[in-house]
Amino acid sequence: MLKASLFILCLTSCFIIRSQEKIVEKTVLSISPKIGSSFSSWFGKDVNESELSWLNLGFVIGAQAEYGTNKLKSITDLSFIQKGSRTPINFGVKYKTTLNCLDLSSGLRFYPIKQLSIQGGIYISAVLWGKLDYHFIPEGPETISGMTPEELGINWFDCGGKTGISIHVIPQTSLNLNYLMSVLPITNHSKIYNSCFSATLSYNVPVIKSKTSRKNDFL
Image (cartoon, rainbow, N blue to C red; front, side, top):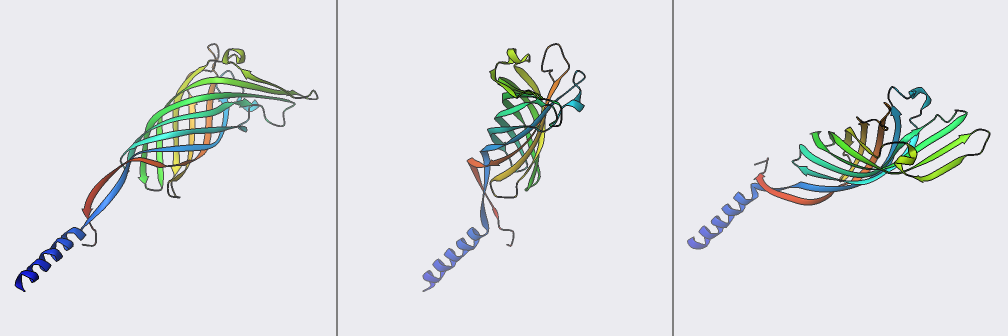
């Protein structure tokens, strides 16, 4: 009887000690596919910004990899994004340039709170092909597609800075607001630069997780 009581007491003690520990699982590496819209324009000394509109709508599709702790993560982003410029809708001459670009960016993302993150970094971009849309009213609209950077009269390479914020309210889903600005002119003989704002939705897919144990807060 004494041995049975000691055995039960030993099991109870082990259970109590075990119950004081809580397994915490954290995502170390994740990949987030994303899709959304871009709003772009040009700026600089050699362009009259009042004659351009930010309603140059395009689309963004890509994926982002995050690696790090809950507070600070390194990010790498690969995106297909449309940039360019257009005249305002109420202009007598409607002119729009669409640049289809492949962007690679890298930087850091900081989480001041769980529901919000701030990011900053650099990007490099390659112009794959482009399109011109113009309408000399009252003449009909014309479109020239599949144009190379040389035919558009611009450089194929671009680089600059990127910053943004992300809102993480829905589990594994984020609303991302980003702004990028080039540091190289779009041509070798002008001071005209790319700028682009994007709004995307992404879905976080954990790839690597780590497990740690800690004592329960209520014990």
